[in-house]
Image (cartoon, rainbow, N blue to C red; front, side, top):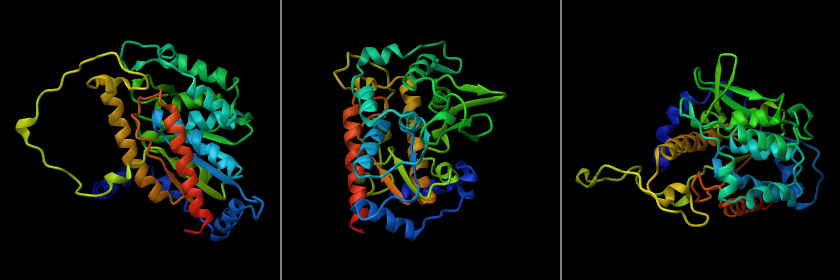
Length: 334
């Protein structure tokens, strides 16, 4: 997997917009030392901490666990930039929702809740309209605008026609995160002028560049699309006998509790499209974290499918555990 990621690195240089490299990393040893002292309880936080929350669909519930761990460690979050699910969780936190409130929404959802948020449309641009999700988020965020949030916030979205990245830091919070999480083919894209806006994670899955431009002194990047550690070893590819390859057909059965829909049979067209996007984001995210050089990178491999919105408890715990590990390494100077 490491070899594959290195090969993908050259492609990433073409995909990641030029401005992701325009803001030179400003990692300060002095600030890093202060951050460690804050974790040890030996200093007050007199510098700003920016949080870059990455894309990942249901995997993004891990961001709730990350926030919980940072709070317990005494870290104050001064600004947040989010892509896709990272914008949904980060926007809620910036709007004043507590970790407990975010957890309650994530953990108390069942299949009926999920289905009620789906408004299918004839797939001219997407299978799901997304208006129900926007209305739900607008109510959850108490109809707040970004400029009125207690924590400075920005969400990313991409014009699929030109490949331009846009950062939304004004206007309706719900509209911003709706645009930021418009997974191509799955959701109808949003529009602005002649732009067709889709998921920000398409080219900026971990918006380190954005939170750096917001003026953060210390940047924490959270990549919930991290590959499992056991995939890092071995060859970059495996061999397969073509005579064993057959045509795949979709089959269905009633899914068990906490089971992703596509795990209940063979993936359908929408699920394949979604997983294709997620895989592309994961490869970009891995190289983006390496290129962006945040002060602290928290890589979370949840082991969950991107569609599995009913296993939030697992994702939250994974985010919490990985953050504790990362903070402990900083605390002990490793």
